[in-house]
Length: 397
Image 1 (cartoon, rainbow, N blue to C red):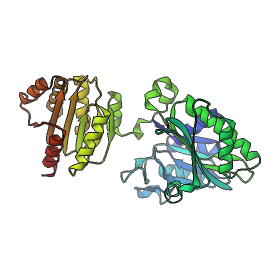
Image 2: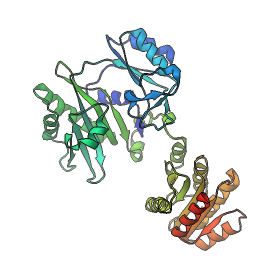
Image 3: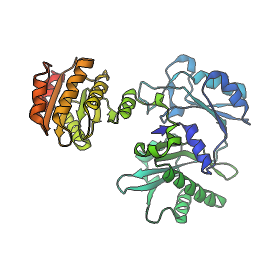
Image 4: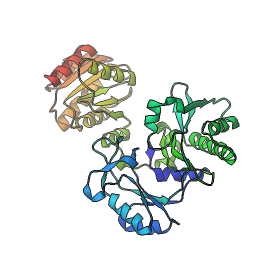
């Protein structure tokens, strides 16, 4: 689960990290009041969406102006004007895709003088199963280009969970960033605070970009992205309360409400599979035979008829889906339950695209019989290869 910048900065402040004073604006009428509560003389007006690259982004609507999603203002009136120009308009960045995201929240904060821009992040390293700290002297909007063109300028190391964070970790970051004097102590304290926040809140990613050094020689977190482990949210009702469902894909949101593992993709063949490994294999074989999967969908090992029905509805709600492949290997999951769920869903929402069903495992013959006697136009497959070839042929002609 991701949260907005202003929410992440509140967490940073709670854990003792240095951030600028700011106010969130949810409607245009409050923009001038919010800006007036800050000292100035420089205000930064930021669109709040769950995507990076806001500064270089563009708005679809002419009324939003030609500036990006991060703007500077030199008066309260100008800050309010910029906020009003962005609210309700669609911001397109390299991370949103061409559809963009509608800006429903604005964050106005005090401007900061910048001597240096640095990069700092904590994330879960899947390979080592540890928390990794990543830092670079090349912070700012072009960090992706730094990673691609000059990876030697990025330092990454993990923290041993047996010892936890130690003082030398913070000093290692400080030295890598070229900090000196009081900045080394500030950096060490910041790393301690961020690590504690990361672990206590079960985070997956915490990115400070840029981490700045001011002309006075102090460090400050100028921007922040934060993501949390969805499987641990039951332990953090305070974090769940920060969720902005308008920023999430409606299909992925519906899937989460029914305990389905779903990720929307850009292809044309919808997939409904039980088991993450089998789902990945199904996506791979679809690509092997010349098509693209429209989603990753794992209904799990203990899915009910109702759960399968909802999964089918989610797949068919995607306008890009031109065909559906159901691939079930029944172990804990029974093939007859899948068959009943598919039939119930088709009768409920209709079927306008080709549907290929491959069943194997527990109660497979009963499942095949249920589908056969359903009267539906379903293409049966004998195995995964056969199923993939049939659905690609049906879609591609």
